[in-house]
Image 1 (tube, rainbow, N blue to C red):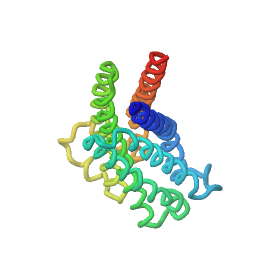
Image 2 (image 1 turned 180 degrees about the vertical axis):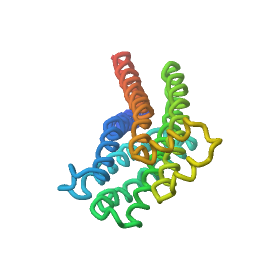
Image 3 (image 1 turned 30 degrees about the vertical axis):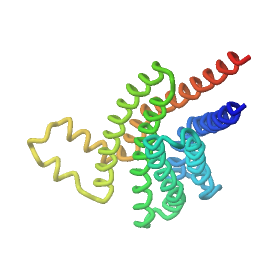
Length: 240
């Protein structure tokens, strides 16, 4: 008789885990598109601060759902808490995307958008580390190896994006690239890169590079959810 209660509790936590993974899977690409267009375009201006608030809130909700799983695992919960903290920071900073677009000359709004950009990259790092911890707890060796390999690639790519974002911030505050071009010992490839960043790559290059780690993170989220569902239904079938 004492067995059904723990099983019921486990099933509830697994259900919330699946809902959280689904929210993250759909929320990540939507967050990239909505936040970028809120900050750079006029498409979503009619809705004000609501779109970025809703989509960053969805990511925070997804991580909240994950926290119901294996509450006693301190390493897993610590990794999850870091990701949740960054998601809340993004949620709080998301209105500045709209305000900065509406008042482009405001230095404070621009600074908050820059802080959110770095927080978004760190959020992706924290999410990949959280997936590593989650994979280590699930009884699927193939999933565990996939998570380990793909998160390693993601973390390296996110490190490159972080550096490029730093360069973009450096250039956006008015540093003149003429000084760099006058240094004769700089390789020509670096001069071309700096010129491209100066003429608009500060926004587009990190965005394009982020598509690969975003896609791989989404694939890991989906596969993790499918593995959990397969194990749950297999267990039910065995019980029957």
